[in-house]
Image 1: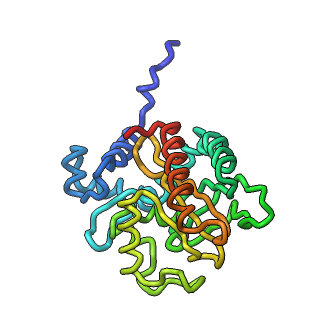
Image 2 (image 1 turned 60 degrees about the vertical axis):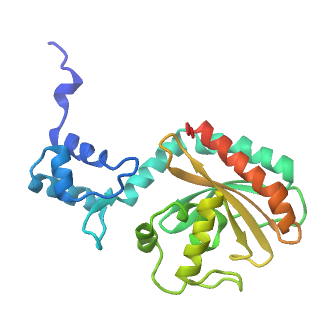
Image 3 (image 1 turned 90 degrees about the vertical axis):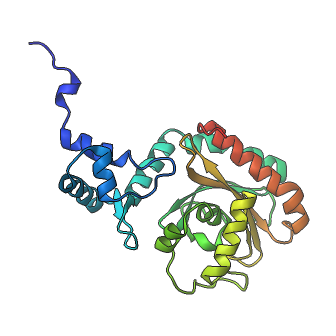
Amino acid sequence: MARKEKSEYIIQAVSHALDLLEQFHDDVDELGVTELSKRLKLHKNNVFRLLATLESRGYIEQNKATENYRLGLKALELGQTFIKQMGLLRQAKPILEKIVEQCNETAYVAIFKEGFIVYLDVVETNLTVRVVSRVGSRMPAYCTAAGKVHLAFMSDEEIDSILPNREYKKFTDNTITDRETLRKELREVEEKGYAIDDEELDLGVRCVAAPIRDYTRRIVGAISVSGPSMRINDERIEKEIVPLVLESAEELSTRLGFHK
């Protein structure tokens, strides 16, 4: 009996759902039912049913302000799983080790998840006074350098959906606790390409981070260097830490297929 071609097993509804997800690419972050119907050449009712199914599983979400649809967190998680399986941690490890060799401060690689930063791996300094390892822990994005480099490249609508529209929890006297001050700082981060946590989460700890991008040009993580404020002063940040973090983030991004 002749073996069937795989194309004969394709389920049309699944194919349409994947076609729908693939409409969100490059600068297209939100689409309405009418526009999706035109693009997919499907009846609006069929598009709505596809959206409802994908939304129920978290792969699509609706912007309540515009009533348009965008990719959901599940799509992000799937992408992050792919990146990890393709070797984000494997590629990051030697770069983290090189950072520590050069500056002898603790280096991290972290990802963004639902408004928090999750630290995936660390290479620690051999100095006695050091930052306590944060691997596996979740820290608020608004008061961490790694979190701010993610937020800085998001739209206002994305930030509004992630962060509560109220005063943020104050961890130290330096914690940014209001939306407008944070927006101003994020604009500066976007312009400079790196972020600084100036004792905003922990007293006595400063951190510098830069974004990691993959072949899709999306930010998939951050590289950061942390250390006690008595060693990480302004001059050292400007002359040593920032150039090192930017160079390291660019090297890791290139390994993940990113090209300017």
